[in-house]
Length: 223
Image (cartoon, rainbow, N blue to C red; front, side):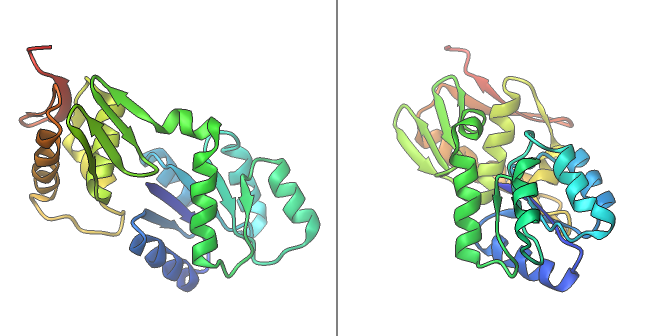
């Protein structure tokens, strides 16, 4: 799961980012509205964690812009009742007072992604493969495989694009946080590990390499 955390207080933002990363999320931190808009144009996110205390009501503007497009948990610095009600009315899915308790925040994220309007978009199917992002279970003819975080990001990108090719550079951007430096063969390493799990499922699908371009999930010729 890739999450955008929008928070203008750098120290608390970094602490929250690291806590979520330890729980398996890919987390990008934006310290301003302009940075947040740039990130959302560059990456595809599963959820938005938004601090409403951004200057000049920019937090509210972000919430209004992405209303209905992106599940959102609002993280206000204070809790006036009218702000809470207004946030929920203009598109927030949930509301959690800062400083956020990690177990509660993770529960909120999972809850908004389990809602029917979000789950329909999240569950992925291609040929005989079924993937549930909530459990990270990839199911095929011979059972299932539990995917680690980067394998999960890989299969989501592949299944959403299938049978089209996913550009390698785009995969690298999704596999690693914006502040992480990936090694030269980082994508290949994730692909290699994933291929072993795919093989164990005896699927009719193959992860094909298009040299110089990227990767694609395709049905075998037998299909």
